[in-house]
Length: 183
Ligand code: 5GP
Ligand code: MG
Ligand code: MG
Image (cartoon, rainbow, N blue to C red; front, side, top):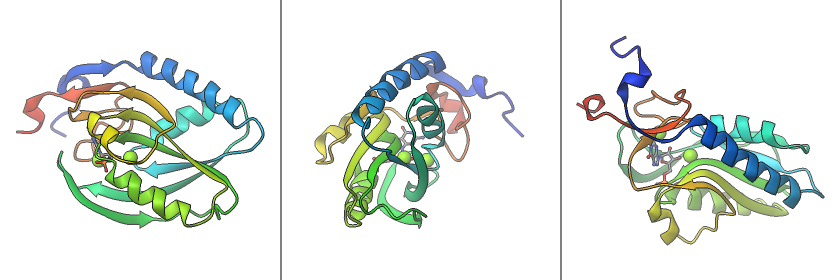
């Protein structure tokens, strides 16, 4: 392997693991309270939401269930292709369920719009969205996001589930990459 040391590829850390955990605990408390009368089905969007799903679910004090779907809007680069591909469906029937979609990041919101309209057509009792990170452009799209971890600048970031070319998902903070990584 040419880059065994992940930290050496990091340019600027926007959020530390501690800041992410603290914010997630606040959101989990809100979700516990908002879903006090029901058992939500957390729907994680693979692959990026793996870390936030794992940490959010364990920060909840109430029962929840988890399921996964996979869509793809990015190739291996850093620009949105605008093309959403549906790669894996849920195994749970969500009709009548209280669904909480768990996202890593919302950039253009293309992926999310597609997901939300698809899931709503299946007749859930309710459908809300939680995202750990959100970029400015997301505010221009019509999808309403109930829980947002952090609003971040319009930069390409990695870590906490987010990848560049398949790497850096296991970096615990949220960071930008050193330009040498792209060259
Ligand atoms: P959108 O459809 O909202 O433009 O993009 C959503 C998806 O694009 C995210 O789930 C994520 O996979 C990817 N994405 C958007 N912004 C970033 C970023 O800054 N870094 C990484 N690694 N992925 C991103
Ligand atoms: Mg995602
Ligand atoms: Mg990606």
